[in-house]
Image 1 (cartoon, rainbow, N blue to C red):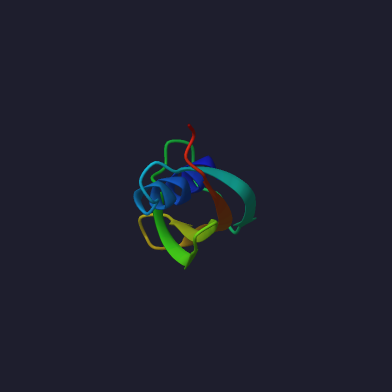
Image 2 (cartoon, rainbow, N blue to C red; image 1 turned 90 degrees about the vertical axis):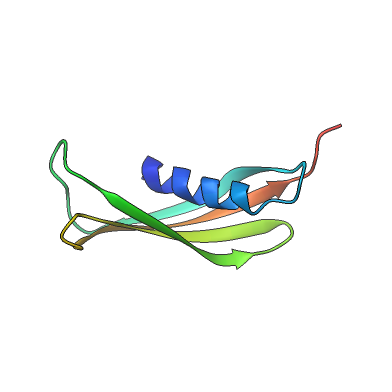
Length: 83
């Protein structure tokens, strides 16, 4: 879940207006299957909504065979510039 949160936060960061920041304000995770310790997890984050005040990202986590491990949907707040 932390990997997916990182990807959604990174996606938001790359789409922020200059001088603003971001913070996760909501996150929902659905786990479907485990991965072994040391296993490879592939994450793809897709923007669902890119607004002025919030962004919503959905991240799919899969194994190298393409089997779905988890889906994470998170809302990122766009933080105003600090003075």
